[in-house]
Image (cartoon, rainbow, N blue to C red; front, side):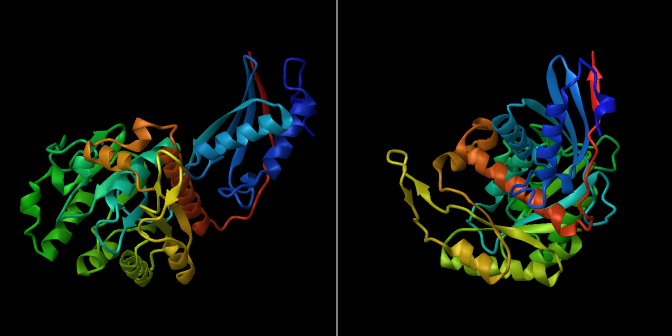
Length: 366
């Protein structure tokens, strides 16, 4: 089948067939129906004795593609480099320029680490290969500027019409905190806050963004419901802690998004456990199993269980991120795993295509 692509300088037939077979049969948590069902294999290049496999992928998943390459090396002793070309679809149609998909990060109550989680997920999606933005919807208590290390920064406008987002480590951000002092925003009434948020979303000159994460204000009152209805949200993620009171409020958050027909991709259980730095023992300070029970009751999934770790809090207070400070660390890897799950499940919920197979094209580059 592939003989027309071969020459003495090219890959041998056994290598090509091994790569193709592995590609056609590879499955994982991120690719439960197989990588071939959602990713198009463009070609296989041999450049300076390096095999590069080019895939067109519909969601951010760099770490999973690296895992694919690692397993191919382990099982077939074939070393490859994956060139994952992200080509996303717009899950929900809207008129906001520059943005493909909007994901709401919400919680039923404050104090569960929602904003910290939102910032780290933004950096995690970026690490997975996506262009990302974050919008601070907490008009009354904006915290994103501080967490990004841009406390006190003010927006500008090139054309006098649209605001330029604040750029931090290639992450595009917008918040009411970049426009007015925090104490001024806290006295606004609901309608004024809603209008302000609409301006932040629609009057920002967003660059080309694959995922815009919206850090929703805590709670499930009128302001939260109004924002959920106003924004063309593709899906939502709920952040909670294992405490009963937090779980009860998280359930209200799920119900709110169900009411406005926004799919909930899953629940992140934050502060799930404390890992002793001396013996490695897990201590469940706020209870255990609550997130799993919540997901079972509302037919959604537990996206991940993040530890109660002082470094996460310290990085947030210092305007830093665990993803940037220790990208190879366990916490960073946990955030990336959650981020790739979110991206994959967002795609899968709206993907109506049938699994297809791709023909491998072999190219020789001198």
